[in-house]
Image 1: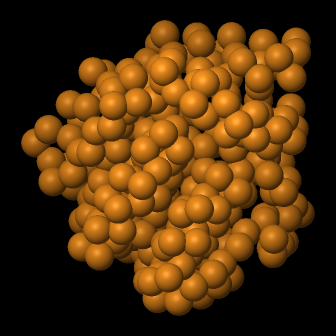
Image 2: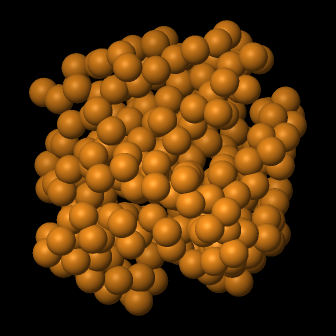
Length: 260
């Protein structure tokens, strides 16, 4: 991966292809390698940029709390370095939170947003408590926390089917340093509610949700598309639509990019 010096740390990123810029932002405990299959397809028509977010992959930690704004600023540093003026952002889970923070901070540079298994809403009080429990758990046993977290991202009926993918994801997730995990959990816990952007953001918007997603309960998030121009796409499985519904998501997102 290429490296960009930023605030005394390195940000790791890759770029490939030509055309409209597509920026792919991974989720919590993931890194830019999660997009490999998608990058290969997208790069046939677009300029694709993948970035390891703060404290993940080969990108260093800035501190003990990585806010979504901190991560968005790091993304902007890469895009500025690459002289990209406008882009479509696609974020999985935490990557979606970062995409929304980016859209709030740098609205004029956004052509479209894909929130994949993500939400514009802030954490509920219950969710914040669960974040604190997760922080305590990961500090107590980093490996056990990571191994348990990954399997729960898939719908129950898919855990055996995608056993090899789950194991590969665990191996990648275990490379995430303790500080990166805690800083991301702290940042997600305090993130702002950005539902207003779904109503008034002057760019195309696509929301992808899974009906059996245990991380983002479908019934609690599907209604945020109501009364907006957001296109809602629903898949019948869990939090990992890029694996559980790969071909359908590829087709849907390529059609969306064309509309942008």
